[in-house]
Length: 216
Image (cartoon, rainbow, N blue to C red; front, side, top):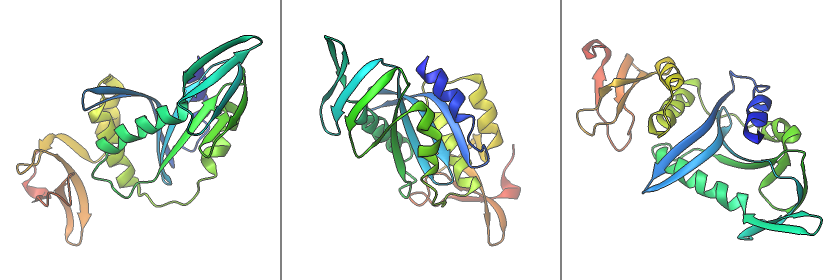
């Protein structure tokens, strides 16, 4: 329920500046990371962890566990700030060729909870989520780079869906073409002498191919 509420809230974002991906599952080094929401934006990558707990929520940035308190009932749960750090680690592994990316961790609770937390990381109510995202307003990613990043994430996810194929098709990555040197995706780029196909693993791999040499 919490994730559906957040998905609906994120639709308020300008889709030309923000690309929202929901329920992304990545498998890194044998461990699975389920990320509630990833936003690839002009301003960087937002990684959002959603909680739909009720009662008082108590905790600090570096505590291993936080506490949910409802009258005399108390329950410990894993610190979502640390949980989201794990998600960002997995995402950085998938996007290792984009070393320049900025990542923003946001933890959001529905209004069922009363937050009694003290953190440097943004921990906000769902109705404050869009405002929190928009406070990061230093744009530096191009449309092409955003599309490349989205396609890379969707290609890596382990819970693939049919809609992923449509999103990837809209990007400049052609999954049927691979680099003969390293096996990476070939990406259509615009250079000094016009369009060409280059390896997604650049700069580690510098393979290029003239657009006329590429067959769909």
